[in-house]
Length: 393
Ligand SMILES: Nc1ncnc2c1ncn2[C@@H]1O[C@H](COP(=O)(O)OP(=O)(O)O)[C@@H](O)[C@H]1O
Ligand SMILES: [Mg+2]
Image (cartoon, rainbow, N blue to C red; front, top):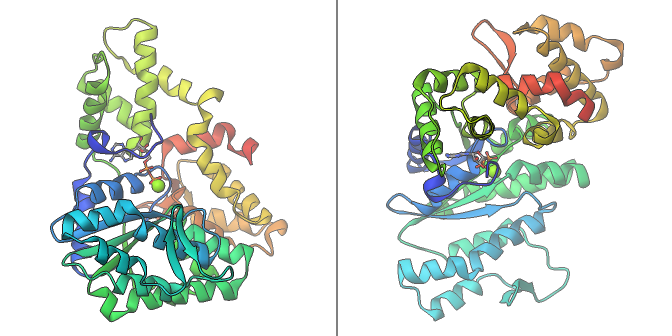
């Protein structure tokens, strides 16, 4: 089912990006993997956790729902003390019960109960110092990589639900951990996110707090990998369909931005068309039919996440973003001056136009092409925007 994190043999290898990430890790850096939703960040990190390179152990943490510093550290420490991880310590490093008990009692005022960590005092608030204490009690002869998935969501929640000062203090704590020399000998962080942490922190004037993080990107598949991916999907069907290389290329051209998710959702529609119509080969018209079905009401959920992101903007920012995207729907590409003119409308006098455009770029809606013009990242996203998006906001 498209949309769930893929593991095992469902995972299509992305060796160039995996290797790039591993090279940066070997440099000793903490990494920041930012890419829009559905690009495949979580799947790639799970793959690395399941197939760690020599000398590394990975621990995956999803922090999307954490709205305070305390909840953030509780989530990570909980995972560290959980038996899934300590069992690994036993099998990989021959840790005995005594060692595990000692590790689990490395944080003052915290113990491990049946349902996770518990506190001696109700008002005990966890901070980066507690995570540091636990991690320093964990000297392994491999490096531990803590994957923190959807990190920018935490910063955004703390900022929106508390205030600037809390967000600043949260990020300073994180930075202290990232820069702690002793800790860095055996622990590295890989942060990921679907919204631009860079735009968020620059809006808060806190960019210097994240400048130790090294950015890593995830590229679309090449045309050849795209074909290979289609073949993999086809071989997974109970009854593979007949599709030649020309038709495969036509399908990939329709998708345009070759991320596995978008190839897969069009593929699934095509397989339906193929069997519904009893075909024995695939023509461009069949692919067009599948493409159109993808945009019918019942499949709109494939694109909802694009609307959700825009709904995080303040009202006037959202209206401007919406105007920008609609203008871009009507043209193949737009020069910056056109967007600037849009932002000069009287209703946007108080709106930070540059911030809105930066977000649209960093969150994967648009990019600046070689002609220095703005363009939608994905033709499918553009199609969806043109048909429905303004009605969903
Ligand atoms: N390497 C991959 N191989 C196969 N499918 C993938 C791969 N990466 C992503 N996908 C597809 O994209 C969807 C979203 O992937 P996910 O890892 O959840 O992305 P993200 O974490 O960036 O939102 C998956 O459900 C799957 O359909
Ligand atoms: Mg994810």
